[in-house]
Image (cartoon, rainbow, N blue to C red; front, side, top):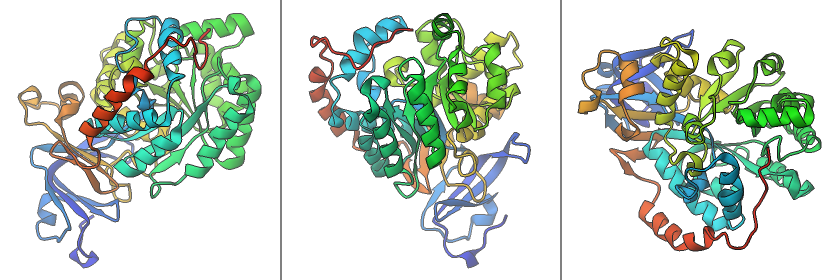
Amino acid sequence: MTPSAADGPAELIISACTVLVHDDQERIGFAEDAAIVVRDGLVDAVTTAAAVVDLPAAERVDARGQVALPGLINCHTHAPMVALRGLAEDLPTEEWFNDVVWPVESNLTTRDVELGARLACAEMIRAGVTCFADHYFAMDAVARVVAECGMRAQLGEAFFSSQGPEGLARSLEFALRHRGAADGRITTALAPHAPYTVDDTDLAATARLAHAHGLPVHLHAAENRDQTDTSLARHGVTPIEVLQRTGILDTDVLIAHGTGITDRDLPLLRRADGRTAVASAPRGYLKFAWPGTTPVRALREIGVDVGLATDGAASNNSLDVWESMALTSLLQKSAEGDPRWLTSRQALHHATSQSARAVGLGDSVGAVAPGRRADIVLVDLTGPHTQPVHDLAATLVHSARSADVRTTIVDGRILMRDRELLTIDVPEVVRELGERLPALVERGHGRRIQRYDT
């Protein structure tokens, strides 16, 4: 499509770049010496650099030597947990939860959550993440941060059955109140924590409410093989079978982690009536020494989208989806014993189209194409660690780093330009958060928000 000056000045023109594009079969390709025209927050045209030389625009970005990608999506995280980064190190999962994280989270205030979310959004913007799916507490504060900083997010208020009926009620109320907020940049989900902390009655009620209100569900399930084995020993069913019998698999559901998904679960996931996706955060699995990783190949063969994620920074230490993309490719090669899976192009597909579908935004983001929201990142490949370029996809996945992201754009609005954050005051956030940390990390009270027992 060739843009025309008759349409009026463009909102933004990005010129002289290489653009990652998808063909009608969703295969990854690259358009060189290209330009992107943005109007009303949407990609109006992907054309040649020559075609936009004389086109008027309110703002222009010369992206010479850079690659334009769809903004990355963090499909499962707990953004405010950056405040706990490095607090619970070198621990097995049960001790990590029971001895450190869940005691500390009993101290959380709304202000702690807001500051953590603000720092997390700054980190993600700088790493080329334009959208994230968040599952945490005091989510009104996270919604405020998203609205102010300009990112896109799917947000869910997490709950446990131990909270009583009020937990699910709060999750629903939050989802209905914030759905479509921030000029449509916020979508919402119901957010039961997991089958081991939310009982069948509450999961079934969640499924009914999801259908009644047209909401997706975002939860942890079959996070690791120990959870699956414990569920089988205690209840005779896998966590995925729990989701099936309670109706969760008949909703649009985003399952976090799934490294404990077994062969007996695959037919259930294949037959699920809703849109089923799995978010994979491989760095945390390595840190916890879990014996496996998300079975990406098996899930893709049955049509389940696998999105990239980081989980919270308390377990992953970073919110770097770029690293998740590279680790996914490498771990899948190792798990499958096949260097031809996952290829760099397949990894980029997970990072773009599949991640967008995983969070329910497959028709609006995940590609740089006319009619899609203008969520775009520009990656500088002129550094010595990315040269020479023989295979651009491989360079992006295995050589480039999140620090190579120069510019981050959401809905046509520039949130970071030439590595300068424009919507978040990081030093002020770090100063106040530092003052609050002693009270936040205190564990002498003997409380915890829940007990991990799987």
